[in-house]
Image 1: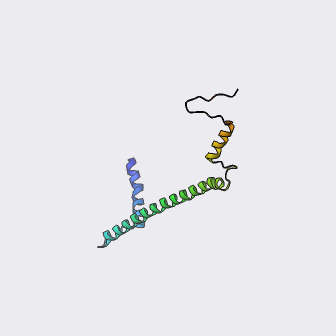
Image 2 (image 1 turned 120 degrees about the horizontal axis):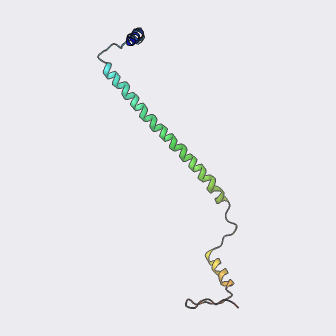
Length: 112
């Protein structure tokens, strides 16, 4: 009984829907045109995804370059306060040793 009332309410709605949205008239070109529309949407969607990913990677690359530039440029513009070569370090170590020669086989003696 409950189903009959629901059916009585739905029947006018279905009739109204069919009048508002009539079925398309079939023709010889119906299926080819349908497939053309489907293929057009597929191509549009795949190129849209490619474009979106390309834009995302482009933005990420630009941001990485900006961050690296912000980190590296100040370091390149301000060299260290002193620049010492390896020879200068060895000469300073030799002068600090006060001329004492240490052979490879003898342990270094501590000054008294």
